[in-house]
Image 1 (cartoon, rainbow, N blue to C red):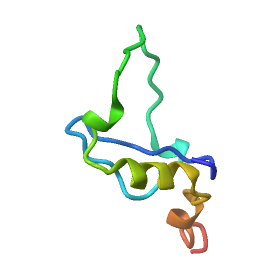
Image 2 (cartoon, one colour; image 1 turned 90 degrees about the vertical axis):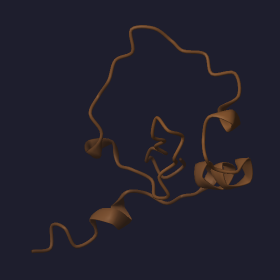
Image 3 (tube, rainbow, N blue to C red; image 1 turned 180 degrees about the vertical axis):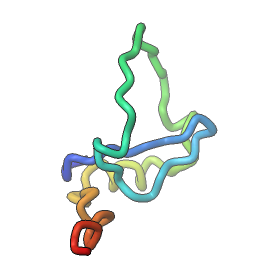
Image 4 (cartoon, rainbow, N blue to C red; image 1 turned 120 degrees about the vertical axis):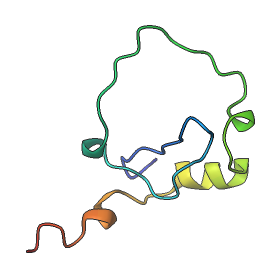
Length: 70
């Protein structure tokens, strides 16, 4: 998204509601590129809501607020 975080979807099509910071993800180098013809057929989220998530400025910083304040 615009905040620099990732929008994550599970293999069953479930989309996480909050963006995820890169440091929470395990790096993966794909051996080949998979062409997904229509992402809307694979995820359990309306296109309008997905577009809103992509355009949002929400970042993972909200999720870690207070984590380092201890």
